[in-house]
Image: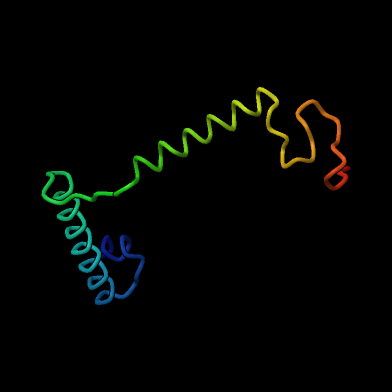
Length: 92
């Protein structure tokens, strides 16, 4: 009984047993659901995920290339070469 109270963190016998039973049943249900996904009985199809991931990767590569090449002007205020451009707010 002391072990059950220690696991649940509840000192009273009846509430500790109820909590242990509820937690055990919930764990078994989660294991059963996970098993259905692992065996392929259930699946989750995320439509458009792969296309969105590819578009994000492509955009990231484009921005990275622009930054390295100096063709991106960081919001039009500062060029990668350093001098301030006067059409934006003065920084610093």
